[in-house]
Length: 187
Image (cartoon, rainbow, N blue to C red; front, side, top):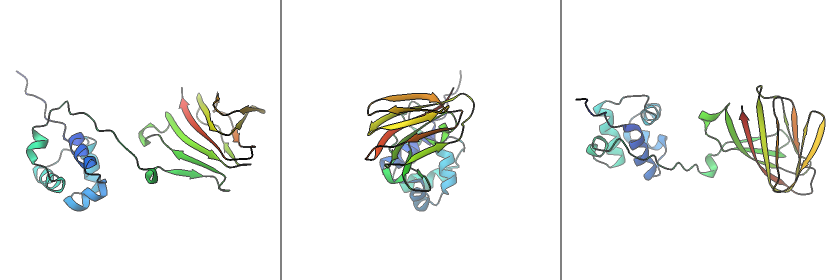
């Protein structure tokens, strides 16, 4: 007869941390466990000692038994990223802002951004990896996409899909700011 698998502690700790609206840094400060170790535990990359678990449960105001008795079918929490934690990239002239909406672990495969371009602003992109395509959905205003020497207008509500493994430009030639969802996907 096989022994039951030990409970997966990382997601349970993360669940309790997020229920209390604590960042990893805040939990590290109250528990005395380093942020790096907490992150590794939550991702299942470290096996904490009893002492470490004791410190974490004290900081979260839960009993150690809540971690040990938890079902291995524990549901993952819904991750909410506060607006001020969403990374942004700005062009040097400040007329274009890309808010990075995709999680870091998806970089290089599928990435999505909220794109805001002021009038006369543009996003110039060098060629991405071979096989990469972009999907640009205009949510407000109008943009144009230039690739292979061709300029194609993309109106409010429309989606442009195009090869991104060549140099390309997204421009706003309209009178007001334009907002779009940009998905970059490697085939």
